[in-house]
Amino acid sequence: MAIKNIIEENRIQTNKFTMDWQPGIGTITLISVGELEEELDKAELPDRTVRSGGRGKPIEFDVVQPAHHDSGEVQAMEDWYRDCKDPVAPDHLKIGTYTKFDQQGAPRRTLALDNCWLSKRVESESDLDNDGDMATITWTVNADAMI
Image 1 (cartoon, helix red, strand yellow):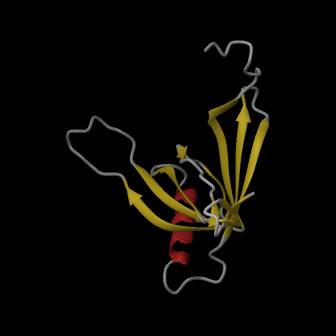
Image 2: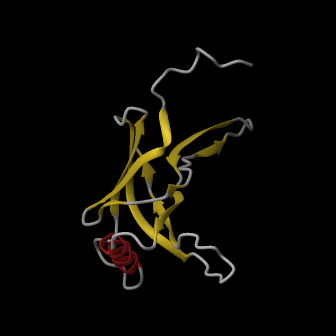
């Protein structure tokens, strides 16, 4: 099936995005943001039909940060992760803003992520056989909802 002339020009590009967390973190340089999957609860009725339960399930996704970037950015994420550990800081929940840009650099899609917190940190592996790949930190982010 040919899609030529069906897709509008000036599309949203997958490599042009920003992620911002407030309060206190700001915009962080990221290499990637994983898929954000939102799903609603389902309710099975007595007649075995399925309907929307109305409530959204929590969201979980990964973001990858260059380990060598601005030490303030890495430290901000480390501080946030520490705030999510026991004893959990009262202000550990953040509001995330994920913005995707079109080919001309204009923001085309913005998603708000409610009550974000970090549940996991993964440091990239080290290997002497490696020819110098970039070291990264992968953070698992949880959120209550995507708006």
